[in-house]
Image 1 (cartoon, rainbow, N blue to C red):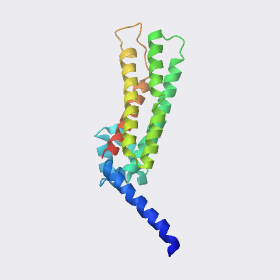
Image 2 (image 1 turned 90 degrees about the vertical axis):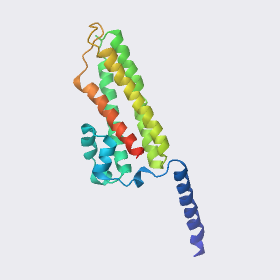
Image 3 (image 1 turned 180 degrees about the horizontal axis):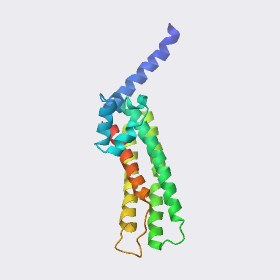
Image 4 (image 1 turned 90 degrees about the horizontal axis):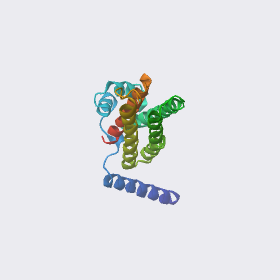
Length: 192
């Protein structure tokens, strides 16, 4: 009996410490949210059908609570970010691009470079239960994605200047938008 006393006392102290920290830094964790399944997906996606269909494709066990959907959306976003970065890098290798277009694509690549790391940091923060850090990482990632999207639309997508206009493949802006809504869904879940 006495050999179990110290480990049990330590376990009790750690669980009490965890509860106190959780209460101090933001109350309930997303996994303790009363919502689940479709209601949680609707809250995360705020009515955006592309987001809803993405999160509905999650395995049933991940749709059961906010943490499962957060992990699913972040892993999905991580893949999207890598895919988008690859597309932009391939576009930027075109030797016939005017300098303004090359500069815009390079700037976009620069903004996307940290996105994968920020998503990975958010995943680790959620895994550790430090939701406030996960929110900060995701807000930074969304900012980088927004900046890249703005660069693509304003500098490259401007059809009024034929010298600068570059016809982007249809899926480029769609990929950027899709990543933004997936990251936003994860953020919404963290704030539930």
